[in-house]
Image 1 (cartoon, rainbow, N blue to C red):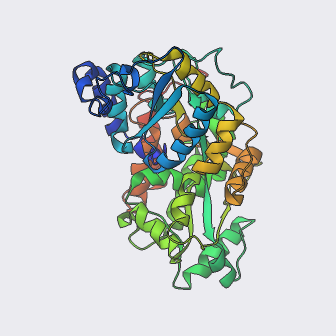
Image 2 (spheres, rainbow, N blue to C red):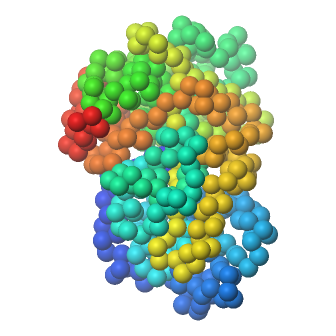
Image 3 (cartoon, rainbow, N blue to C red):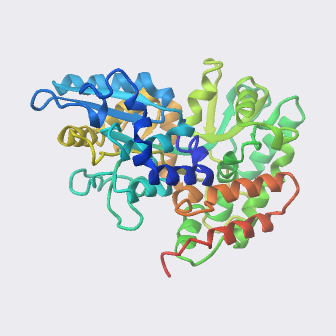
Length: 449
């Protein structure tokens, strides 16, 4: 599960859970997961509670919400251990929806991780504010990295680097190559081509665009995939950050309207369709397209490895700002940090430093099948390569995640609920945009103010 499986997890409810857990973590530390294993309290491999053993030796515990990547990480860390005799890495993964609370408790107690995987952007800030992490300024060089990714690992108030980003995610349209070929269609180069595909497919027994609007966390992603060029992508992001415009801007309002206008090409009763159901529609060949993240690739491929999947950027809708072009929105999906309570500071720091190297980045691409945050990584999977190249060539920030999760209500929560109401016919695009703008302004201060 990812930061937006995970963006998925960026709800205010869970944010409050994290804050409560951090405040009460000392009282709860006896419940930390690493306190309940065979090694707990025995001076064995219990993370910050373990003993260093011989000089220079250590067992480092790494915590993560990436349950689905456990085998891949064990392979990656086995490679690290071969080059670092005396160091063992104990990778522990927890359920993503419970991870924030578990991590806050672990970092405050004595049984937490040496190297925690931490959230990004706004969701990182509570952990930073708790004083649980070792600043990495001057210890890790990320000067040549994508600035959007590096921002995910920094404290908002002090601008210091607290972690190393492990992966980038992008959002785009996946499509079934066989269904497109069967209906004489090509990946669209223009909006007219895109609408032709929708109209043609609707005349068959195939759903043109699979959307799971029952899960409102998906809807800001759907909006970015379908309409980022309509509001102006990166140019709009820069303008709204600095206060030069707002989410009531006509370009933004019209981009929200695009999603509503395309409802007719989505599954019937779309607000009752879960994301897993939408993915099944696509993987089973009952839907021809699905807007989603690069993190969805393995999920879509798993039911039928022979399924021929392609990706494309949705072309700019009519009325898009002059100069606006098809874009691939993206963000950094979590980070690795060093716990201040680790009894193996030197070894933990060395491991995190290694996580900023091309060697680790390449293994993320090869073993976890993710787009690495490390520059210079190559991709053997053609779809990962295409998604990475598209972001590199013409990327834009997934704006509501990268910049509008630093307060409550968050931008993704507001947009998710708003687009759901749009698809239910309860609000129009202007109303959705106004509610978004009003909610964000309760805490957001433009950088130009």
